Structure formats: C-alpha cells, structure tokens
Length: 434
Ligand SMILES: [Zn+2]
Image (cartoon, rainbow, N blue to C red):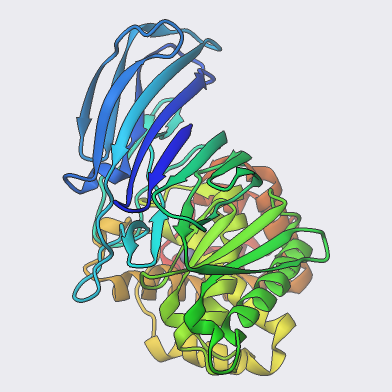
C-alpha cells in the first residue's frame, strides 16, 4: 500500500493491493473485507476496485464495515487473486467531551493523527462457517482478523518535521516518507505528529522499544511519565517472553494517544495521554498497568488471535492477568494493591462466555471479561501450580500462533495430568468449558 497523509487536512489517500491465496479448502465466489473506517458516514470513500493485474472491474457491495467483493469467477483451491483498492479517508476529530465511541483510534486531535483499523482488510475465514465478520457494537471489539504480511509506504504532506510512529521494520526514505513492513501481523496502525518526541530502549532479547509522547510530559519533573512507560514496556516484554515465549516482532511501539484507555495493534499499542498526565511518580497507577496490559496483547491478540465479538474474554482475561504476572516480577510489593485496585474494588460477578452484544455498558463488559476473567485464570493457576500454569500458557501460544483460537483450544493446551475434575468445577462456576 502507498498512503499519502495530508496533515493540514488530516486526510489520507491510498492505493492498496491485496493478494489472497485460497487456502480454505473450497472454491470461493466472494471475498469479504472488514472496513472499520466505514462505520461512520463520511470517513471512508472507495474510489476504485479492480483485479490488480488486468484492471477488470469487480462488483461489490459496501455496507457499513462490510465490503463483499464478487469474484469474476470462483477462486479455486490454492489459487491466488490480486485486487487493487483506491480509497480516501477523512477521519473525524477525537471528541473532547461527552461519550467517546470505540473508533477513537481512527481520528485526530490538534497534535496527532491516529490511523487504527483504517484500511480494508480481509476478515478471517473458517471452513464450514465462511467469512467471519460480526456487527460492530458500542461495547468491546468485534473483529476476527487473520494473519497477513504487510508493506505500507507512508508519505506525509503539508507539514515539516512530522514523525510517523508505526510497527514492524521501518526505513525512512526521505524527510517525508517511511516504509514499514511486517510479516505475520493482524493489522498495521500508525500515529503521525509534528509534536511527538520519542524515547527508545531494548529488551534483553533484543526487541527495540519506542515510546512516542508529547512535550507536555517533558516539563516539570522531566519526561518521567515517558521514562516510566519505557521501563515498564521493556520489563513487561521481558517478563512475557520468559513466560510465553518470544513475541513475533523485533520492534514494539507505544504511542501516547489523545483518546481514552488504550488499544492494541500488531507491534504498536496506544496508551491514553490521560494516563501520562496522571502519572505521579509511582508505578501503582494506570500508566504502568495499561502499558503492561496492551503489550501483553502482542501474545493474546497478535500472536494468538480470537473472535473478539463471540469470545471477548479469551484475550482480555489473559491480557489482564498478564498485568499481575508483570507486577509479581517487577513490583512484588504492589501485588496486593493490584488485586484491590484493579479487581476486587469492582466486585466482578456473573459468568464468562457471552458475546459482546450481551453487555449494556463498558463497565459491565470489563467487569466480566477482564476482571471475572482474571479470577477464573487465577483459579486455574491454583489448580495447575505456577510451573503447570506457565506450561499451559506456553503450549496455548505455540499451538495457536497465527490462528483464530477458540476456548476449546485453550483447554486443549492444558498439561497432561491436569486435575480435570477441578477444571470442570471452574468451567461450571464461570459458565465456560467445552
Ligand atoms: Zn485488552
């Protein structure tokens, strides 16, 4: 893909070429893309869609975030098709007051343009079920993303001194152009700013870590919040590597973002500037927890995918529990604080296993999928012991790298000799299990 970003207008025009090999085991008459940018009217415009090699036009239907492309003839098993899509994006400003939606990762503030879920990507396909693309909803995420290899060139117009934060291997071609490439990713997200600064470091295993942040955090007590984010990122990535095995990428990017909470993408995570501003010098706060949380999604999202709409707890319970595993190693004096601040104070109740559409509020969704999920994972660790628990996580990661995993895959990775009667009681208690 070639993308030209106009920072005066906060717009993007792009030419995307998609090559898809049909490994589904059956001929395909249609390809289904998710176009999350088209959830809101006026943001995404498809200019051109054709077969890449001969320019033959393709008929399609674009309805909200769903783009269904009719192939001129059925795509045979192990055959490849190429498509070219030209599109223009006009992201909305990030709301500064009132309710904020779940598409804030595609938007701009007065100092930053964030491009998350910004281009059409094929959705996952499962033999027997077809293309997996669920409806968007106000709570949680709804994506089912297959792995792909990405090459994206980003050129910036209309501003001098822009920095482009992006994942994977990066080559700056000239003052305004960067080339990013990434194999085995679920997506590629970017953040562009003329006011960002960057801090960098490295993990023990050689992963380059970069933190993009703003000048406001470099006043007063120096760039303490950014330093804390960097040291948390390095320590968390080392911890997860030791527990789960190596992550898939050589670089990890953390971007301070002008929207709430955080959001994970392959090789790049957003952590809200609210948390940077709220940093008070102590690791016992949201900046440290959310940084550790989002980076754990490099395992539980990027490496091991899942159906975000139907099995939202599958990655979020593990990501939130990863916060504890990081705290245990990096800040053992804060373990009790973490349980109280992060989990117990919300008194999580109910059962896991519901799709996102069952939740009426973000708080309720988080209480169940993140916090009740933590209690379930902790019970499992109690059954397995620490060594058995780590063996379980590592086996799950290894067996499902690149896949869209389901709860059954998590249980299938349990070590031999596990007390399955105790596990069955956990399934019963939390409303999950095969
Ligand atoms: Zn998460």
